[in-house]
Amino acid sequence: LGEDPHSAEIREQTLSMVNSSTSEWTASIPVIARRVDYIHRRFNRDWNELCGVVIYGQPHASITEAGFSALRAMDGQRTVKEISSQIEQSGKGNNMEESIRQLAQRGIIDLLTTPIPMGRTGTRTVAQVA
Image 1 (cartoon, rainbow, N blue to C red):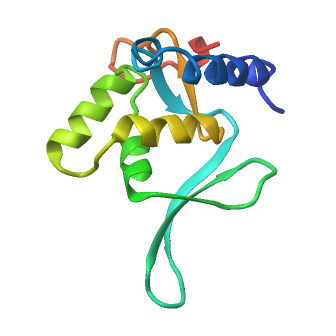
Image 2: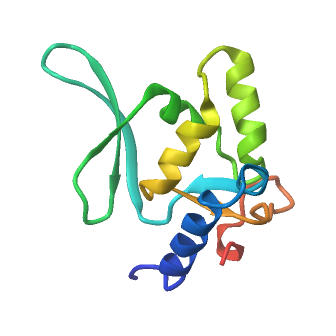
């Protein structure tokens, strides 16, 4: 095993999209980046809950609760705009498009131009992403 040979290409595409027009980048499909090892919640010694992400070869990176909600909502099918609207309407976050933009800029998510193909059972067929 090893790193996906398409990781650098997808990262360049993501950075290009996030810096494009609002209508273009909010039409993209956000997915958890290929280099993410894990996403977690933890408590510090003062019992404050923290959300975070660990990307391969990098230290822990804290994310906001809004960012955590956005990551949980990403299914490889819905656009940035659809996810942002859903979370904002549920009252679990404000200015979600900006939260998602920050996740993309930090390498925590990738932005795709087309949805991830789904298998007949409705589960993601990850092998077909690249």
